Image (cartoon, rainbow, N blue to C red):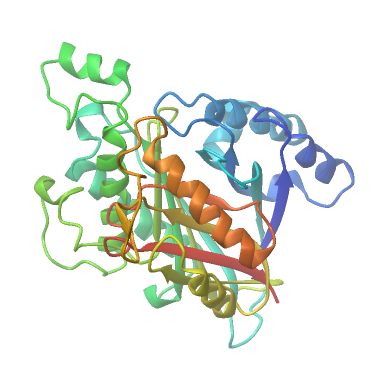
Length: 350
């Protein structure tokens, strides 16, 4: 396996011109594109339309280049978008290609595994069915990456559905309950369920759990999961990244844990773990009422959502270390590292 990594600037959620340019000049073969992870300047909430808009525009470009339809592209390529580019965060997309390649030595190179779950019904979102769907998809992605040792996994990005008003109404019309009737409130349950699915698949959580644990038992977590929920999806997309001796290419991945929102040292640790020049950074951000003994207003501000506070703060810290504000940073860390902490992963060119 040989994985290619390309960072694409975006002038708007509908701007796929950087991808068009890479295809036009022969830098990439559009047939080898397997995934895209990006940030858009939407609000990051349940009603953030910019994620679906970006998917549509990038899928159209790839469809034209592949000689197929946008719908077919979306069945073959994983599109993961996170809305909200507060502060210094820059809208962008990290594009991944995958082709055949021979192993490159004992230190390993970047390997990428992909999998999608079946569609989830509204009543399954944020519950054990959601957990089990992601667990199974993560196991498939691990096999797809050719990684046998979970300790070689450094980052598992999962994007899945949340509860929209239409989905809540659908459940009610069938006489079944949903985990919450608050669309934005469902994000915590969806993110938490997906993170627990990763933790179970990688052996990070070994005890039996049930619905009551989701978004509540925060002592149960994955140190490498990064999950995001949106209304534009009906299934879960799992992108698993690690290093493999059977992979080739110029990239490696490393990770660390942000102990809090201003842990610049952990950024450096993740870069060192990757062992090269940072190309793409992926992290989570969580708001807190206090930070190193000082009170913050992130959780009590009625004007700005707490996730937007957190993304702006953590984005500034990471960019101050890397010198690049094009960072994939999403809010909400339910079951993603211990409470108060957050994961960070770095893909580097070596």
